[in-house]
Length: 337
Image 1 (cartoon, one colour):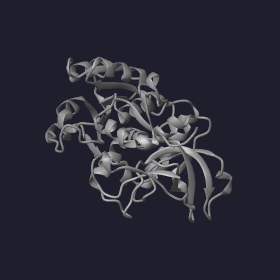
Image 2: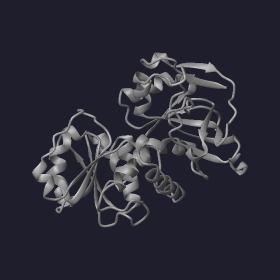
Image 3: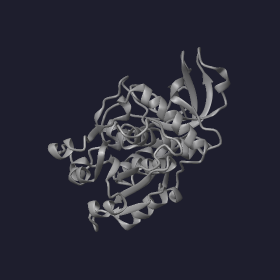
Image 4: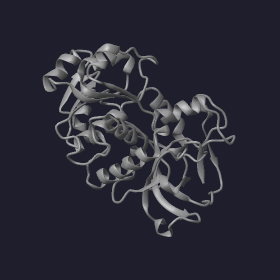
C-alpha cells in the first residue's frame, strides 16, 4: 500500500510517500481502506513538533472509507461498511494519510449514504464544536433538533473549520447563531453555514452588532482567539454563559476581567478534543451520527466550507495549504471512491 510517513519532525518536506505492507488488524482493531483523509491544523503542528512514537508516523486524525477486515473481538458484520474515523493517529502511528489504516473499533462510525468527503471532515472539527456547544452550565450536554432553541450562540471566527461546524451544529439544534469574520468573502461562507447574523469585526463593532440580536447576551461563545476577543466576550455573555476556548489564534495568554465575570457567574472553558473525557466524546459521536443521517451537517461551498483536494502524493502541499491558512477544508484522496 501507499502511505505518507515522516520519521522526524520538520516542515512539510519531511513527508514521504512509501510502500508498506497492508497491516493486519489486531484484537479490537479495524482495517479501513481509506478513500479520503482530512487535514487539520493539529496534523501539521504534530508533524512540526512531536516526534514519531514508533520511529515513523502516518499523519492525519480524520478520514473516511470502507472496512476491509476486523480483528478478534470485533463484529464481522462491519466488513464492507462505509465509515468515518476519528483520532486515528492519536498516540498511534496509523493515521489516515494512507491507502489503509488501523483504528480501534470504537473510533469507526457508520457513515451510511453520506459522502466520504463529509465523513473525512467530521472528526476533529465537529467533535470540537460539539464540545464547545455542550460544555456550558445552561445548555444541554447533547445536541438534537430543538436542543438549543431560545438560546444564542456566538461563533468567533465563523469561516474556519471548527467555526463552520459550530454554526451548522448550533443551527441543527435550533439556536440563533451569530458569527464573526474578517472579510466579505468569509461573511458569505458563515451565512451559507447557517449564521443568522454575520459581523465583520474589521468594519463593525462586535458588541454593538451582537447586542442588536441578543440584547440579553449570548449563552455560548465558541472562541478561536480568546486573547483578542476576551473583552468583547466578557461584555456579551448572558448570565451563567460560557466562553469555550478551543484555540490560541492571535495570542497564547488571555486576560479576563474577574469581577465582571463573577457577577453573571460566567464560565471560561478550555477545550482540547484529544483529552476530552470519553463520555463526552461518546455523546458527541452519537449526536454527529444523527446529524449526518438527518442531513443536518454538510460540506462544500454551499455549506460554507469549500473543499480543496490533493492526491496522496501531494500531501506535503496539502499540509502547506492548511499551515498557510487556506479557507475551507483540505482533503487528501487516498484511493478510488
